[in-house]
Length: 142
Image (cartoon, rainbow, N blue to C red):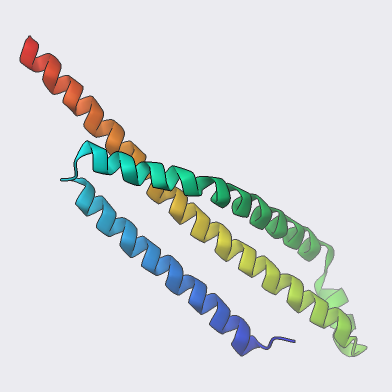
């Protein structure tokens, strides 16, 4: 059975990965200002390819989060206090596991949302650059 320290370490590692991903996104955005359209398209295509697996993970994680929320609604403070008084360790342990799973799923959703934001931003930059190119070409012909 995992303890609080193990759970904390697991969540801390996930936050570290998300932080690294955010820094990578910031770096990509800065670089995108001067990149060629071909380079932007390549990055966007890679992001789109990984989107499929992210969508599955997001769906799975969202389902886990929803079931965790539903389970918490069913539990009342009185019931939990009763479990403590009756020393029903197995129920308290199951509750802890459910809440840890919920937290893991929520962290996964956060990670996936950040990755989706990165992909969407790259796509938006490419679209804006395309629009600017056409606008400049039209302006040059007028």
